[in-house]
Image (cartoon, rainbow, N blue to C red):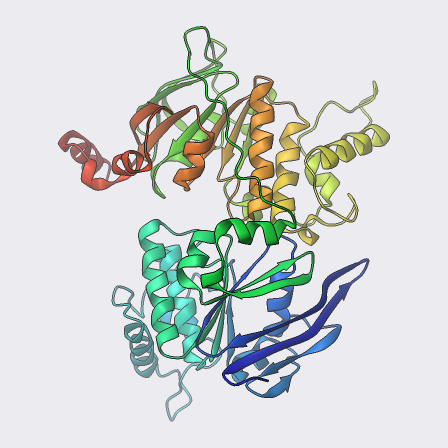
Amino acid sequence: MSKNTICKIENIEKRFPGTIALKNVSFEIKEGEVHALIGENGAGKSTLMNILNGVLQASKGKIIFMGEECNFANPNDANHAGIAMIHQELSLAPAMTAAENIFLNRMPKTKLGLVDYKKMHEDCLFLLNNLGVDHISPNSLVRDLSVSEQQLLEISKAISYDAKMLIMDEPTSSLTEKEVDFLLNIVDKLRSRGVTIIYISHKLEEVLSISDTITILRDGEHIITSPTKDMNEHKMISYMVGREYEGTHIRNFIKDYSVLKPILSVENLSDFEGKVNNVSFELYPGEVLGFAGLVGAGRTEVLECIFGARRKKSGTIKINGEEANFDNCAKAIDAGIGLIPEGRKIQGIFSKMSVKENMLLVYQRCTSKRGILNNKALDGIASEAKNNLNVKTPSLDVLITNLSGGNQQKTIVARWLVNKPSILFMDEPTHGIDIGAKNEIYKIIDNLTSVGVAVVLISSEMPEILSLSDRILVMHHGYKRGEFLNENITQETLMSYTLDEAMTDDERLAISKIS
């Protein structure tokens, strides 16, 4: 092992029944660097990190950490050796305090054997202050903290184990731009103290800005390890997908709406909780209407009100000019509306069901005259959807949890496409998936609009909104702040409409009354 190498991964192979997830992967990680690990969904990143963290054991090969060969039986072994991992799905206990979460299963005790809450509070405060975090109280319940604050708790917990190497899996995927900046400053601070960071992210700009070295995996194989200074986005994507990258697909935007009739009309829509306030808009066949706004702006809640997943207090909803009030989701589905939800793992997939069962969950047309499901026809529909959307799966009968995030997302998209909706709501459809899967989702959107399907797209990525939307509606604190044709509109203009600084006095007054 060369000088300053903290970890050497040597010929690692991991086999699962029917598949090889990792094939002779080898590379080195230097001490005190931010080492980015990237690749498409299913490339083997999480599998490799789970081996490094003791969640899984390698079928072949070895891990050498700080000069010693390691075979971790579980994450506790890895923690005690100096390796900690922060998973994309945070694992904190929501009903416990910040301090209790950090010191779970190792709380300091008094001489009488009772939990020493005073010392635990002081130790927690020391860890947080050491990271420059002064806005989280050790006594705060985790359920009351934002996602970014929970991320900081996870980092503090890792540091409390005196971690020499910290694995961060998609740490900024659910954060606002301001929160991302704060977290990256923490990463930089840890690097300056000699902590090694393995940084997994699909955000390539972020990877280029924070990392020292980049390793790329593809289909379970090591493709390249390179200094970040020798990389750019184009090169990275080409290595990830295994071919020359052609760039993001850009739609031909609708310029003239005068000949179109709205398929969906919403007037003065409000809910009972003040999350949606007098929102009005129209949606036209074959268009993408982008919803921009910060987290908590009310974008998701508007779609939930229309779809029957949230109680409507007032307002009118019309489908093709006819008034429609959906008091449940089934009625919205029958009317030709589909909804791809924001939380793939919580609201999207059914983890105990197969890929095929997840695809056909809302499909109602494949029945015989006696109302018995025609399994042969269902198999054909699922197989066609799998091929059309390029869902990578060893079989339609495997559990959906065996698929990568991108392929799970395409399965959820397939669920609605087989139902042939006329309106499709897509809430953060590319969240947490790689660049290849993103572009496939973009092409699906283009194909849908080309046959007249109307799409509402919620995305926290402004470039995505700008590249896909014919019109853009900006939400802010439950209100519609503005609406724009995608014509000479800039990211800066959109951002200015999402911020509190741009609020009018009337808006401030209205929001204060709701609060």
